[in-house]
Every structure is written in structure tokens, then in C-alpha cells.
Length: 83
Image (cartoon, rainbow, N blue to C red):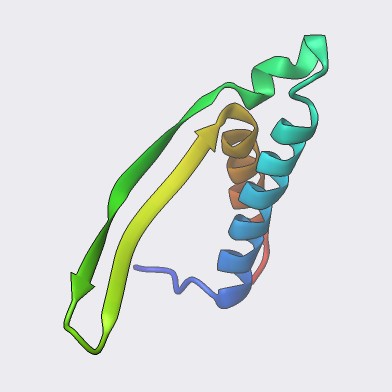
């Protein structure tokens, strides 16, 4: 049996990641909360496709930190309750 994921649940998870990332950035200067901003980044370098008339650039990057992961976990728990 599979559950259908609603747009509200996806939105809750995205907001949780955003809030966790914002909290991690805000607590970067606080000594006892600086561990929330510890993390790394993953990226695919931008690649350009030049067709003469049209120029397309593709790339992707994400910064992952502990605060963001905590926000994601809390948001997933909340999203399970939202239907």
C-alpha cells in the first residue's frame, strides 16, 4: 500500500529545510550554537551549451548543515501528520 504525497507535505518539508538553514546561519556567531552551522556543500559545476542564438547554462548546488538536517527531520515528522 502506497501513500500519496500531497503538495502541502512537500511544502512543509521545504519550509523546514529553509528554516533549519536560516537558524544555522543565524547561530553561526553564537559560541555554544555554532555546531548547527557545521556542514558541507555539494555542487555540479555550471556547464554552458552555446547554440549560437541560444545560450543555456546548467548547474546545481546544495549546502547541507546540521541545522538544516534537524529542520528536515522535524518537518518530516510534522508532514506525516498533515494530510
